[in-house]
Image 1 (cartoon, chains in turn orange, cyan):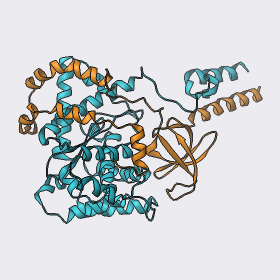
Image 2: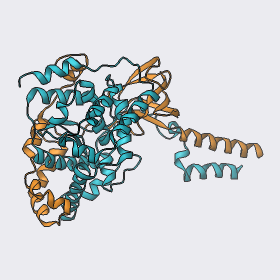
Image 3: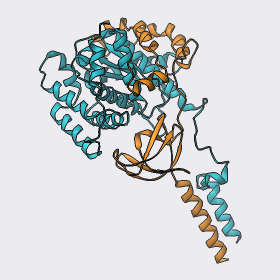
Image 4: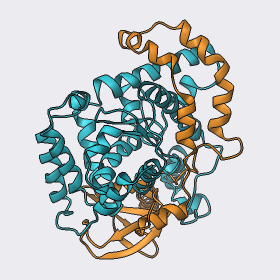
Length: 159
Length: 278
C-alpha cells in the first residue's frame, strides 16, 4: 500500500514538473543559437521562425534553450511563449483586417471626434486634428518592399 | 490503493496543467505559426488601428517628405531592423517627416517616423538603424499602450478589442481618447526614462542582430548633445538627459560583449542616398 502511495505521488510530481517546463517560440525570421550568452560566442545553429525551444535557464538578455537538434543561447527579445502570429495588416490590392475596419469606422469617426471634450493638449492640437493626413499615411503604407529586396539590401545591395 | 489512485486522479483533474503535454494531446509540431481565430489577433488589429489614427495626426502636423529614394532607403533599413524585433504579426511602416525638428516617433502597431532634421544630422546607416531600432523597440514592448493605461498581459493580450473595437459610440469615444493620450506621450510627455532606457537596451541588441554597429547610436546622440539649436528642443524635452544616455548605451554595449565586434556602419551607402538628386 505504501509503495503504491509513493508511486502515485512520484507520478503526480513528475507530471507537475514536466508541465512547468517552459516552452518559447522564435518570433524573428531567423535566430542564431550561440554556444555562450554573447554575440562573440561560437554559432551553434541557425533556426527559423516558429522554432519551439524548451527553456533551460536565463542569463541577462539571453535564454538558454534546447530543441531536438540544438542547445545554446538565444536573445530573449526574439522569443515569446506563444507561437508567432500571422501578419496583421493591409493586404495589397484586396481587403484585409485593417482595411475593413478603417472603412467600417470612417463614417462615424468625425461625429465622435466632434462630440467629445478635448483636453488642454487636445485643444492645442485641435487644428491639427482636422488635418489628420490619411492620404499621406496611405502613401507611407504603400511603400512596400519584398523579402527579396530586403535580403539583397542586407547583402550590401543598393536601395 | 484506492486513496492513492484517487489522489492522483484528483490532482490531475484539479490541475490539468500538471499533465505532461504529450500525455494529454498529440505532440505539437516543432515549428508552429499561430493561425487566425486567435482572440489575441483582435487586440493586435485594434493596436494597429490606434497607431494608424495617431500616425495620421502626426503626418497632418508635420507633413511627409516624399523623396522616393530616401523613403525607400529608410524603409529598407527599418525592415532589416524590424525583423529582429519579435513582433512578426506587425507590418512596420517607416516615414520621413518634413520638418527641421530633430526627432523620431513610434505610434503603436508599427508606424515609425523619423524627421528630415534628424536624417540631416546623421553620418551613416548604423546611426539611422539605431534610431529606428529604438522606436521599433517602443512598439515591440507596447510602451505607448502601457503609458496610456492599457494593461498588457504576459501572453500579449491588451483588451483593446473589447475597449475600442467596433462602431459602438462608447467604443469610438474611448478610441478617440486613447489617440489623444498617445499623442500626449509622443509629442509632449515622452515615455519616461525607464521605457527609454529599455528601448535603448533593446535597440542595441536589435541593431547588433541586424549586423549594424550599435556604437553609432551613441555617436549620433553625442553629436546632438553638442547642438544647442532650437530644432532639438522637443527631443531634449521628451528624452532622457543626453550625456547620461550616451554613457548608458556605451556601458550596455560593453556588458553585452558587443564592443570590438566588426559590425557595419555603411557610411558610403548612406552618403550616396542623401547626396543623390531626388
